[in-house]
Length: 268
Image (cartoon, rainbow, N blue to C red; front, side, top):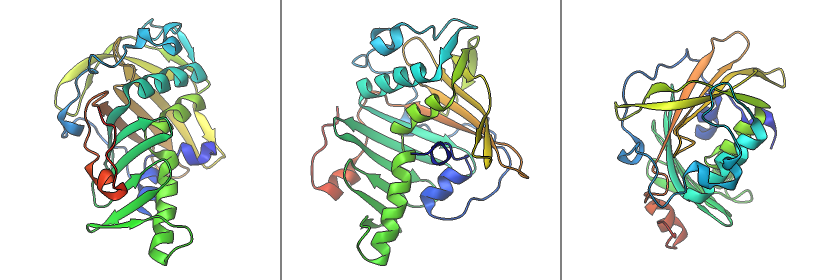
């Protein structure tokens, strides 16, 4: 997958998933509390290995202010945690908010993407569906017009969906620097002391737009509590989005995918 496709700015990502053109908007504030995904922003369940217990994370100074972390190494650590947790959820806060819930399996991931302004996308390791007005359409590149459109939406979403996209985001930044712990407001209205790990330099993506800022927030137990990105397209104001992660290792609602596939998923 190209970096240009993976690191689409916040305005483009939801528009791509919805199937329409990007809508320029100003930077989005995250000060107003929003409902938490799955009703939880608590630390990971006890069954989820803490960061230090993961071989991919143990050699990294993720909580030493001023320490430098290679993007590839950070990506491996985050991906290892995601795979160890197996389940999780995310809420993307910006002009077009969305939520995702997922289950990681050996073959890939089952992901339910809920575009909060309307419509859902269900992704499995080998299939996908797009929903609108309560009607699910199975993706088929050789099917009807509706099925072909559904396939385009699903395949565009597949590479951008959590949790696989996290590794690509981190790898895109060649180096990150660990900052001092700071209080970060969470969607449940509470705040939490988290360590920011910020990308050192902006990324120019094919001259189309720039990723000006990328920051991962975590603590000693959970390396991925939130993520902030700021992107700029020529002639438009910079746009900032926040993604909040929760439900690591917890039971998540993927009933719709189970109904679509006719199988019971191994959800913890």
